[in-house]
Image (cartoon, rainbow, N blue to C red; front, side, top):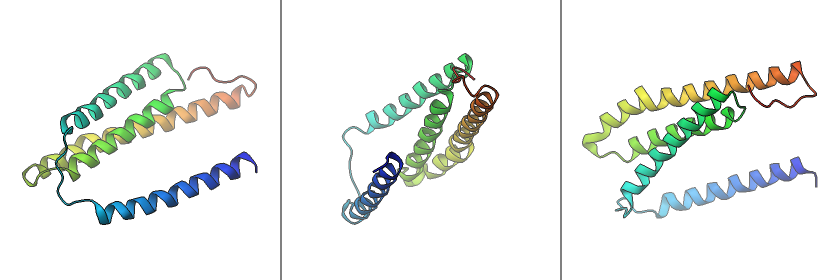
Length: 138
């Protein structure tokens, strides 16, 4: 079996398994749960965002193609942060979480995805200009 069809098959199987797992969780998870490592989970997510923001800044400063990866990861972490802020907010904190998500986290994630897209275009343009040379930087 060729690599691409094998990869596509593996991804489809993974998606089906993830769907089954999600349905199972939806039916079996309790409505209320106390997490023992709540602070660690939230601080860990924020630390990951900081690390990826710094990595993105470094890649942009050094004009590295890894900017694509770092900006995409940063944007994804920001979306995840917004999701968890809103979905785990207590009743009195919901408005603050929604405002933070809509005003800060989602627009920042969008900016990271646009940055990634622009970097992809730059790498592609570099490759078209010099097809025999692998791009080392943007």
